[in-house]
Length: 239
Ligand SMILES: C[S@@+](CC[C@H](N)C(=O)[O-])C[C@H]1O[C@@H](n2cnc3c(N)ncnc32)[C@H](O)[C@@H]1O
Figure 1 (tube, helix red, strand yellow):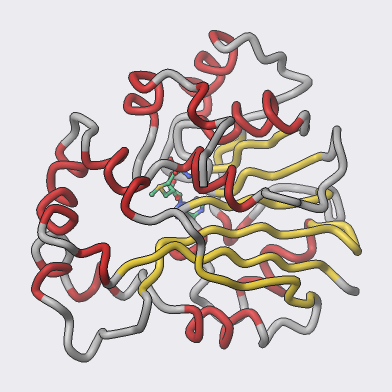
Figure 2 (tube, helix red, strand yellow):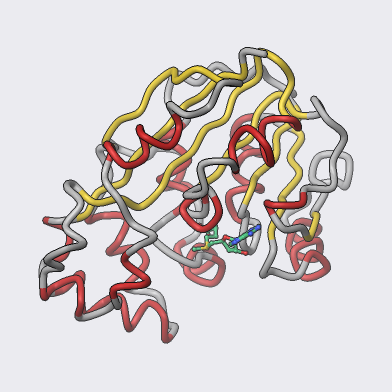
């Protein structure tokens, strides 16, 4: 995929904000032919330093609530101001995905890039913790780092160069995620598939100048992408 929208963004800006494989490219691919209306109210869940939230406002015209646990909403607000985005268009919130501070049925959609695997592996999360905040008929778009095939019983050396067994338990294959989202009685699966993007997104990350990227570089340079992929999941609330 060519990532026409993401490529318009300054490399240095991307490198200073991202916390993993290029989330702009993840979101761009996730939203190809999406069903979310213009000017929809959208939660960017696990938004980190807010780069994807800026992207969602500027490229898609959504009103966005960047919602994140580890980042600082005041810092993020400064960044949004610098990017010329008004506080009507973007509203930064510090919150735990397990205790979201919103009114029920507030959002037309939730978009979640490279973070659902932190909280969404719990079977109850989707229906109990997230779905209540989505309007009936609204959508959840998820992109997670995944494995082509789960191999947790016999982890390849290449992966272990950067991550330990516990960290790798955040990364799973399509069958694993299918098993989780099919348990939801409040949503139907619109699609779940392996994404096209893989090594290019990791390369954008390992070229960043920070200690986490340097750690991940060992695995990617050794060829870890042959075991890895990204998985997109699109759900629609049905009741
Ligand atoms: C790998 S970072 C990705 C951030 C951003 N989406 C990006 O790609 O640059 C994972 C993000 O998940 C968020 N996160 C992890 N657990 C969370 C939780 N329980 N509630 C809300 N956010 C959480 C962290 O705050 C972090 O920003």
